Length: 144
Length: 81
Image (cartoon, each protein chain N blue to C red):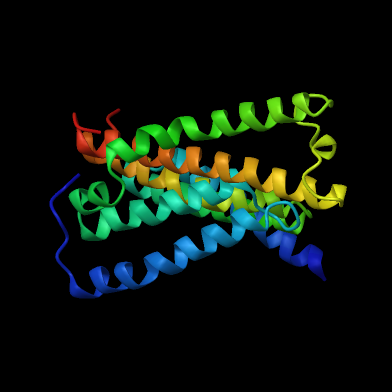
């Protein structure tokens, strides 16, 4: 990365805009089963907010917000969610990821929505960590 | 009248695609490529695929442009013949 671009407007706008981008990412994540969007898109939008921080406020600032020791477990969280929920579905007598067999609530549709949302959260967390890691390791050199 | 908008977007898409390939300044090509992605996202939304459009807008116009610019800043900005 080139040296920091010291401009008060850019820095202030980036700092103000970041929470709204992250809120939009959470909206896309939680409404993924009903409206356009889903885990992957939400993860990329969330990662874009950290990329914006890295561009405007410096790479070190962004690295402090998502530390590597937080990112590494997050990268494995998504596949783990898939496996755990799939095996829960098998244990309840259905196929792999057959949500409607899980006797969590009386309404089968509600169970499906909850479990799909859980899987989407896993995908989103993984994609966010992966895209941020790709960006950091391309921009920052050795210490990703 | 929506076909007029589609026609304008498609013509702009062809123009930006040619501009990306022809341009010798790689930074300008990367920025033009993000414009291409954005037009593509609008077209996907127009074609009733808002899911793909959202992904294209987030990844094509957002993430890959930043990666291209990092790659350019680590190498050369101008293309050599």
